[in-house]
Image (cartoon, rainbow, N blue to C red; front, side):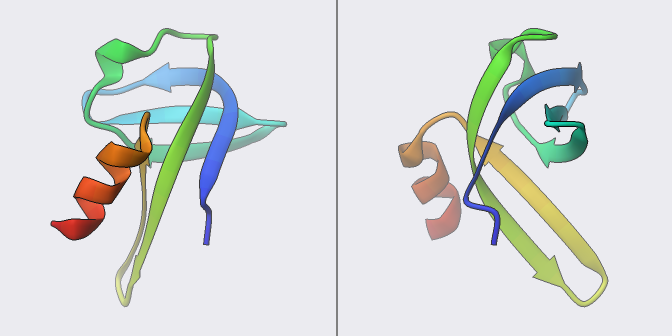
Length: 72
């Protein structure tokens, strides 16, 4: 399980962010790309969901946001 990511914002999308963590790029589902800026340092709490046909990584700025997502 990936509990968090700490790295540099490489790219922003409508519903995701690409985080560069020491040369490895992670595509993370993220609902507030306007809260981040390119080339800034970021720390995201993450939820990793693995299904038969999909692997998804979702990121959150606070533990409260992450906990709410997990409860839903």
